[in-house]
Image 1 (cartoon, helix red, strand yellow):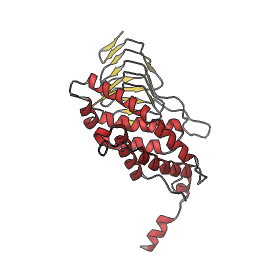
Image 2 (spheres, one colour):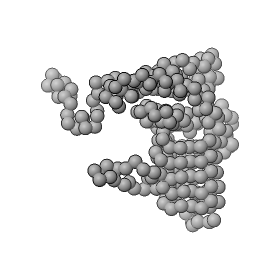
Image 3 (cartoon, one colour):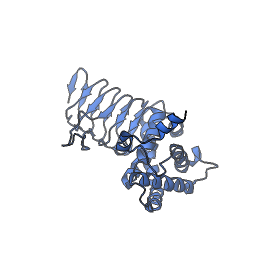
Image 4 (tube, helix red, strand yellow):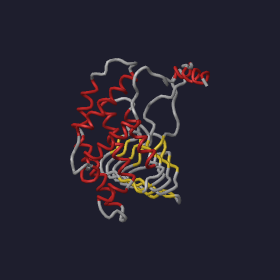
Length: 271
């Protein structure tokens, strides 16, 4: 038993290379789950708050501590005095996050006859939960917060089956119908009034590598312009552009640009 413990506590060369050990306190998944509960209550106090009380102080306190952990871990325990300012900036942006989420709720209720009300969308639709996490995580990306955005987005991924990278750029009035299996990559750009059905992938077609053989983080995901609908199980791959006011049918593999006002089906392209 003791030998097993000693073996597990030794830092292997691969662990060191992958930065899997740290002398600093790492971010806490449980604390970030709690953070998202507080953010849900702050944005939708009638639904998730306590007696309609907006508790931004808890959002600030948890986020400040978790930002400090993320910065310390990524900077080898350097001072993390900026955690206070970053957490405060995030709190000041909560009204902006709420306004964007309200447009997403409006888009869902407008596009889905099964949604009887905005309240039902907030309580029941996985797409709204995924967007709450995405828009929170995206704001943290914009502030330059390390680690936390990916953890927050993966919490929603685990709960909903919707995988949205927090660095993706998604405009207002974004609607997700059903949602299971949707994937939106890091460098994707999505305009306003876009609707995706289950199983849609906005992904990369291939990668470029640097001289050391490492994949390069360059734009590699699609651009989807305004007023586009993409139906279920369609894969849109590479740095291509789907022109505005287009409809892409289901079960399509798309790797080339599509002009505005296009209609793409398995039977062929209609412009």
